Figure 1: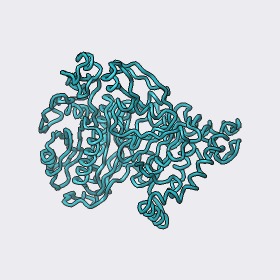
Figure 2: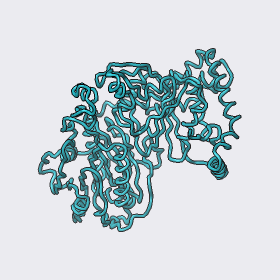
Figure 3: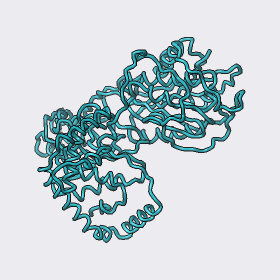
Figure 4: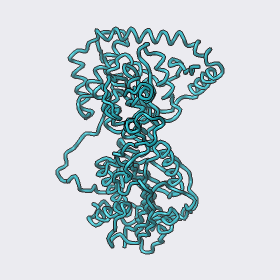
Length: 580
């Protein structure tokens, strides 16, 4: 029994996403679509609904989030080996998606090995398989269609650029739209087949228009004037390479054909601009000869009146945290205290280098004191310091080697396992206290310096990074999950501090966040860095974080409360103080 899908033409709103999907279907060489948006914004519904509009030879194949490399590229056909004593290739998802659509839900949560394979095949159009005694290759050209929720992590830049078009959705809609969407869904749930039949005419009309546009595309043309216009806009957007220029031209031609014209006009150029540039536009680069790449930025409280740049923190939750023990300063308000603009000293930078060594089980110097070490025992095969997995073999059976060594006996008397040839994935989870109490005595500047150095070390080791801020009674994503970037200066400069310290909120949020990551990749290892002045009386001993935790105490006052030691103990973690 086939599953009845919600019709594409029955989805209310999301016109940009619909257009992007249609243009990619008209011209598959555009390179597919990435849609980013919150839950409940019809991402998956529209993506799967596209399948009903494709021609017969264009299949939509789904790549499961938990897919293995064997499932993706193909592997040994065991049944044929056993029955016919012949080594044969069993095609994978990449073979089934050839000349069709490869749909990846939550593409940003794909494991790195699968992302690397997708990059290789999407670039060459050929799937090369050299494994399990098989040497095989086959064509694999497909429209890559991905959906993602940005709150759950960013997408690798290399794969991001492979998507021809990108759409950022939001869940904002009018009261009337919400009512109508619920009415349509209610009708579908009551009698799906009758609902689908009621939209059959619209579906057929849409299919016919798309078929006509494909034919029209073969004669579509773009004048030199509009080609120059595309080049100028791409240059102004500071995009890398010329992929944006090529995709923009193809999308404009497809839109002209979709509109029933053979010549591109200004409207075609304008309507696809954001679809092409949304995920490629970059800030203008400015040369600054006064600073070196290793020089830390001067930290100061930013001017909140300015429009925040790309990368501005996203709010995750709000709520009053009980038990805060923060006290106002001499002026009566935390928020009025502003740190002096000052470069981070060499001493602080040296300290942050020592901080990064703690979770590598290295010995810190006497500048990093008050370390309460609660060394967690490492089980066989885990990673210490980002090195390769210590076990020699994985749990994946090498069937080719097993069958050869068993001389055709079934079941085999012994099994041979594949060797592990990659390191364990690691994510550095940094929790930065952005409450107003950190503004005293350059505490906030030093906290930023610690974050900067931790990110630098993660970049060198090719590890993942996510930075959350907690202050002003809310938790924010300062840097979404991604491979640690080379520099985080542009994010750090614009982070401000204010309000109270929602310590329990941030720890509870991280606990849930980590569990979701672990469900997607059980091999993931977490390192947690809690950077705070400890100005909270909340008890957190009932909260459990995955991986190793280090509390970095930035409290600097004449009378120190010393709460950081207690908090580190409650988290079963290590304690380090910035100050002697």
